[in-house]
Structures are given as C-alpha cells and as structure tokens.
Length: 212
Image (cartoon, rainbow, N blue to C red; front, side):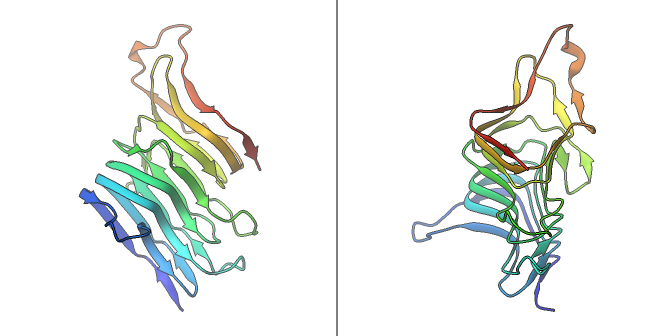
C-alpha cells in the first residue's frame, strides 16, 4: 500500500539548523502524504539541533486507522531546540516519545503524543521519561523544563535521579489531553544521600491542567 513505514533518522553529532532562506525546518522519521506512516523513528544521541518540529511519523490519513502508528522519537543525548516534538503528526496510536541519558531540551518546547485530539484510534500515545527507546531499557534522565504536555495516554516515569529539594519536570504553561501519569516502574537513582524527611518534586505545572 501507499505509505511510509520502517524509516529511521539517526543523529549522533554535528549541528543542524535552518538556513536563512528556510521558512521551516522539520526532522521527520517518515512522511506519507497519501496514507499510512508507521514504525518510523527519529533517534538523536548527540549534536546540536535547532528545528521547528521533530516528528516520529507524519501522515495525512484520517481517523479511520490510516494515519500513523508505532512511530517514535528517541532522544538520549544532544542539545535540542524545537517548537514542537510529536510522536505522530496526524491520527494514530502507539506512538512514543522517549527521553533519556544526556538529552537537553529547550524550555519552550511543546511535547505531543499526537497533534489530534478526536478519534477512536488515538490510543497509547506515550511519553517515557528516563527510558531509552532504542534499547528498550530504563536509562536515567536528569529532567528539565518544557512548555507543555499534550495528548498522551500516559506519561511514564522510569529512571529518575534523586535531587534533594529539586524538581524533575517543570511544565511552564499547561498539560492538556493527558490521561494518566504512571510511577509504577519508577526507580530513583543516586539515593545514597537521601535522608529522613528529604523531598523532591516529580512534576510542577505553572499553568492549567486539562486531563482526559
């Protein structure tokens, strides 16, 4: 059938940025203008990247199941400056964003499971924090600040470094269309300095929260 399936973009170093003549720079694992975009990935382990969008899969298919499924954005290193990061842009389920290792995100980035909000097939779009999607294992991520979290079935916490009095994930604007947060697989690393009564914050939200 017509579509884009099983493609990979791998970035391990160097610098990627717009030329002065470019209106938009998007890094896309797989893009189908006429149908399904499935099992594509963007894997970033290093480098300095400045882009408008980073997208696991992009599909023009509709809510009938011909959109994008099983796409992923895996960020385990590098310095990322982007406006939006999408598991999928379009309709589809089982798309993931995985953040781990030495990844550094700009504090004005919006994270999306999908840019769509209506459709029965928008299932299991997932954000994994402290998880390496390329190896399928927990991998500590120091945390950071983002603008918003959008349209995720679940946000999973995995390998989280202990920071006394610290905040792991700061959301400076809003959480929208997120069904749940799951801490069942979470492990705290570096706890040898933890004392009785010590605390840290796993999530702080400055703006509004709209949960599904």
